[in-house]
Structure formats: structure tokens, C-alpha cells
Image (tube, rainbow, N blue to C red):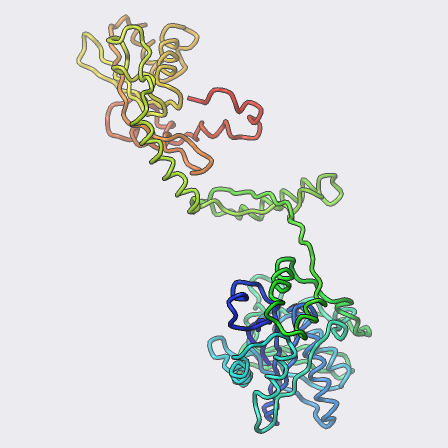
Amino acid sequence: MDLESVLMCPKTKASAMYYRTKLVVNNMTYFNLKTKEGFCYIFDESNADLSSQMFGYLHHIHFSRYLDANPDVSNVVIWSDGCDYQNKCVTIANSLLQLVVEKKMLIEQKFLTPGHTQMECDAMHSLIERRTKYDIFTPREYMLAMEIARETPSAYKVTEVQFSDTKKLSSDYLKSVRPGKKESDPKVSDVCAYRYALNDVGAPQILYKLDWMDDWHELPTRLKTDRKRWVSLFTERLAITKRKFQDLQDMKSVMPESARRQVLLLKTRNRRKRRITWFNPPYSKNVSSNIGKKFFDLLNSCFPPNHKLHKIINKNTIKLSYSCTPNIKQIISSHNKRIINESSNKASTTKLCNCRDKPSCPLQGKCLEQSLVYQATISETNANKMDTYKGITENTFKTRFNQHMSSFRLHHKRSATALSKHVWKLKDNKKDFKISWKIIEKSAAYSTKTKKCNLCLSEKYFILEKKPTLNKRKEIFSTCMHTRKYLLKNARNRGAPTTN
């Protein structure tokens, strides 16, 4: 047994339909290796979905019909691929257990080895695709094409599944088909076969194999033996998306009259967009902790179900995704902004200095430059000794220069920076000194688009240079101070001056 790839309806070469969303039609196929018979169960997305409950119902009705027609059969072997939700899950196991209880029989479900899943159902799909190369407007036309897809030894038997026919079990026999509970125990993907049977006292049981040469082992799960019954799975026709419904309405002009009437039976739904808040922690290989698990555990402990904010703060409204690199939109936007800024700076006539005495400007007429890495060189007059200090500013250099000069004059600010400490040390020792300033590099500060601060990175790079410097080693590992203005607690002060 296997599910055929998605079939689109309507299917035509008309250009008006090429870029339109179409109705999805699914076909579940079964092939009897003994009698060479093929069976097709076809349904569109307005009658049923592709849930494991739907596949369990199809398995049940197919094998029930076969066993009713062949009452002498007491053992059935099912071959399929290892698709989890379609063939290897607890819902399928519950459905096959119910069949074993009803028919008093034995079922072996075997899974093909990954990479070697070619089966007779694939040949059925190939024959059906040859017959569906022409225009098809309704699921009924797909059924007719399947019925004539093969002539010998017999035609395929096609059954249309309606939403009113679908069923599901009222309760489950078991909750898991995994052969173990510990992390080191085998997983469902390791199982190669299941056996559903009745034990000596007539109760259902499940056996499993991890290797074809192994013996059967009983699944270490307690089964519920209470009486089960089949209840309705869908009580009404399923709704399709609003866009798909509108596209089907627009395509009615190229459809025959019978197809137009069927389109009118479809229902649409308005999907409400859920308000989701994303938490994007930066990714680092040095962090071995499971940040996502710890974050959601913290979320559950702080906002339990009885909390008044649980409705808006829960695992469905809060999502987590690691922040690794900027996306293409951010890269293009930052590139365009840099090019535009360069061209505008060349054409602009912005003042670079507002000093009254131009020759005494600390940066030789460029004291109004912004977002830069600067260097202060302190040289003692009576000694051949020079020290350097590197700093950054997002504001104009003159603003930062005035702050430095203030720390040189006021005693209570002598510990403001490493430069001010050194200057006061020289003043205490009554040594004459001279300070010269220069720009090392201009870089962009932190931006919410790029999610990085080139200004801080440049400063750390120049501090690492093997030259005598007054900067401390801890400055290399300090966090970026330019991100503070984007914090939520500073949202009211967004108009405040930026941090130096």
C-alpha cells in the first residue's frame, strides 16, 4: 500500500489556470500480490485530510472488505514504506488492532528498507499518470481514468471516499508503539515489522522486530482492552482556503457546466492570523545548553494555565529561533544605505568644524565627525615616553572631547576613563604632558537591521594591536553599549542622546 503523489483538479493546459491554486485530490492505493488486484481510494481535500486517522480508516475498510469476501483468510501480511504518520504510528496500530479483534485474525505489518521502497503500488501510480495526461476538471474524471488505466488481468477497483463515510476509533488501545521509554532504547524508526494478534486469553497484543533475523518481542506497553467503536471523523464538508476558493471561482469560465456545479459545493474559511512574538537569541557554538528548552520551561513556570496572561503568553504565541546571520533583505538594505550615504556625503557641504579658533581644533578641522574610533597620544615633555588611548563615539567627536576635558579638570571625574586616570597621575607627579588626537577609522554603530556594531568591533581590533596602550584588557570582552537605546525599558527615552 502507498499514497500517490498529489493530483491537481482542475488539470489543464489553459494559461488562465497556470498560476491559480487548485483543488488537491489524493489517491490511496493497495495491491494484492496474490490475486494481482489493484484498489484505489480517492478523495479530495474537501472530503478528507491526510491525517493518520484517515489512513487508519482506509486500512480498516479495505482489509475488512477483503476479509469479508475471503472468509478463509486468517493471516494478512502488509508491505509499506516507513513513513511515520502514514504507516508507522500509534493511530495505524490502533486501527489494525481493532481489525484483529473484530475478525479474530493475525496481521503482520512489514516496512521496506529505506532506499529500496520500490513496490507494485508505484507501477499503479505510473499507469494512472499515463491516463491523466489530458484535461481533467473534476475528481470524478480522475476516477474514470483510474478505472481504465489497466485492462489485464483486471481493471483497478476505484472507491470514492466522502466525508460522511469517514470514521475514527472512540478510544485507543495504546498511546505509543515505541519499543522502550528510555533515551537509549530503540525508537519507532528502528522497527522493521509489527505483528498484531490475539494472545492465549483472546486479548490483543503487539510484537515487534528490530531486525529481520530477530525473534518477535512483545511491545512493553500495556493495552487497554475495553470495547471500542467507530465514530464519525468529519461531520461536514471540509473548508478550503479563501484564496483557493476564489481561484476556483475565477476558473469557472474555462470549465464545463458539470465542473462549475461542483465548485459551488465547496466551502471556504477565513484564517485568522495568530499574533506570534519571536524570541531570537544569538547562536554560538560555545553554548552547549539547550536554550530553547530552558526558555520554554521558564515560560511554563512563570505563566501557568491559571495565570491571567497565559492566554497571550504561551508556547503557541511565543516562538523561538536562533539569530545567526542577517537575511538577504537586511544585507541589501544595509548595502544600499551605505552607498547612498557615501554619495550624499560627497555631495553635501556639512560643517566639519565649529571651533572659533580653527588652528586649535583637536582634529585639525574635523571635530564634528561622527561614529568613529579615535586615538589620544600622551607624550611627556621631559621624558621620551608616549602612551596611547583608543576610544569610540557615536556622537560628534567634539562632544566626546569635551567630556574628556571635563574629566581632566574635575577631581570627582578622575576615574571616568583610563585616559583621565593617567592624566591625573601625571598631574599628581607634576609632570608636563601633551595630548594629540587623531581619527583611526570611521564605522557604523549598532543597527537593528544588521544586528551588529562595527564601531565596537573596530575599537576591540585596534586595542589588540601590539602597541603601548592605556586601555584595559577587560574592554575587549565588554558588551556593546550602543544596543541599550533599543531595549524595551528605554523605549520612552528613545529620543534621548545616544551613548558614547
